[in-house]
Image 1 (cartoon, rainbow, N blue to C red):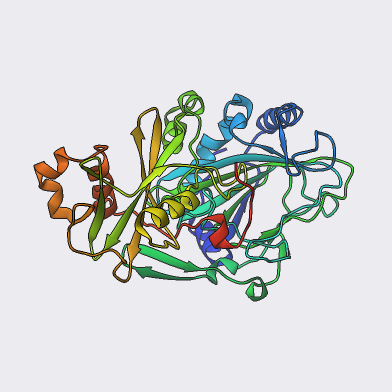
Image 2: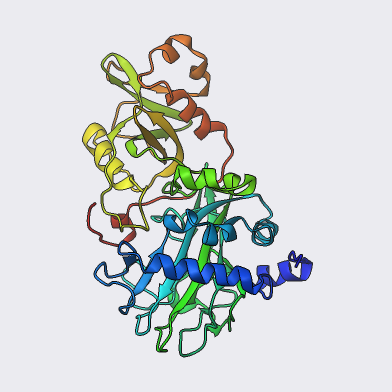
Length: 410
């Protein structure tokens, strides 16, 4: 069927923070996804939440990149009905930020607790440390593949909770103060049935109770972000093979893709519109170095190398950086360099005058041929140009530790 949100649908979404569309997919399409999810969940390498269980033991089973490599599942991410509706609600073209299918077996425990020490399981998915959650403008699509009944576990949503966060612009950065659990409107059952597609705002609070039935609960959970609002802690990189298997729309959606590892990370330290370059072997570059995945949760936070860059800048510059925002990835050797930026409100401990160890440069300096010829890596000027001129909406990116979570190193 042909469908696109009409003005009344858009108004409902703006007011309530979610929208449900029914009957968009035929039974043949739904059955394709059923078979794919069950097939992938039964593989020995399928990830369970507790890292110990194997299907069908009680747990939540996560299907990520492997789902994008299965044509019986990947097609939904670029389905024209889904993409057209997403971009209507965002009022922007979109990129895919995450594609995950979940299978919850009987006796699974349901939603996990929200971060910052909360014990309650209602939550919203805007999180500054999470690649799929730290964009300033994104939404969830949830395709129910079974009836989300009271026994199997409904999806509860808090209508209007997306309107509670406070946002303010600070230079090139937009800061968000999330709503608190005690302030949200009461949760209601979305009453999702098989084949229903729910669009949910990034700030809408929701909860999934435990599966108390004798059957599996599964669905497809994709996240889409506006193309001008990159994840503040850095994006997931989709596999090159998945990108290439898609049609034109899917290749556009998987804009962030590469098989190269994030091998290095660098920081643009901006003070009053000027950025710090440091000397390295007689040439100039950005502070930083080898990237390591520190303080992250597997599957959810891969690509967030802020904790590592915090350590590098503290060692190299003697400065504590409490947040960063993703700028871009650049090829470096066999890997990628993930570049972040931080906007200083006050002068750093470093002397602002040039020295043999550092120098401060502004946009006009990027036309200096002598400077360009003496850059260590070559992409430093492109990174600075992106930070100063690309006009993207950037938020605060944090490490897990800054956000109040502890996780093992990889």
